[in-house]
Image 1: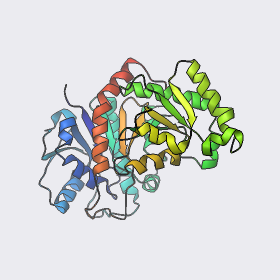
Image 2: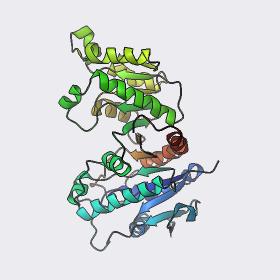
Image 3: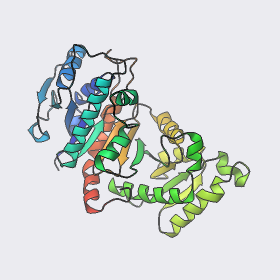
Image 4: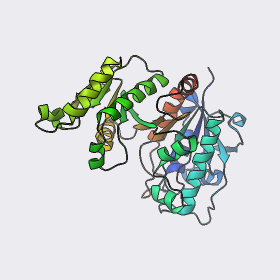
Length: 342
């Protein structure tokens, strides 16, 4: 089987994105799994190459099929949208926010046209995006708008642990209010189909509890009794393989050990903490429900170390590998059966 074409966006050029992309694509391991195509600035890549004293050929291409996919060569679709004479690392700049957005839109257009099998994204900075006049909170919201996808799913993967999120970027108080029967039913249906699209079938999804010890029969909260348990029972009657609610202090460990295919986390930090305590550097975010798979590092732009040559690229490498592992299966399933999450 031919290796998938994976588009790799450079992220905010004032952060560590260009450095970790260069380091990741310099890894010979990547070429065992993927044909990596960088979308970004060739000048910035050359600057990083010289800074790090890495012997690499930077090849500008106009389409993925033009690339030379062998270790020692980086293929880049060059948007030429940076002026290195005025560029600065480590600060919020509108020009960097605009550049990062351009990399994303280009990668989306290539993926939508079938030239890329999946995309892996380096980090962006929300303030820089806003400074550029682009009104999105982050990658997920951009991708949803650019592909006309309604409420895409976020899934984390680290080792054998997969985590979905019932709520994302809302306050904890608001997230608790969103833990209701209908939303849980909707999300488990979406999560189940998302796993199938990744090639994972006949697997059980666990629902994490909200309150300590799942509420202790109502003594420590009633959400489990009133909302979560009824939702799980309805789903089971419909034939979904789902269990819960299960105490959040143990369910993630059980999934890591292979008891569950995935866990539905009820709020942002519940799942983030669980994943990052397993392996911070290799926790990968997947966006599901789009017409193509998107993976991403799960860290920020790290302005404090940007441009210094000391950023670790493990997460970027892992994001590319995961995109390559699932990208073709995901796209095939999307074409064959439009997912619930769109």
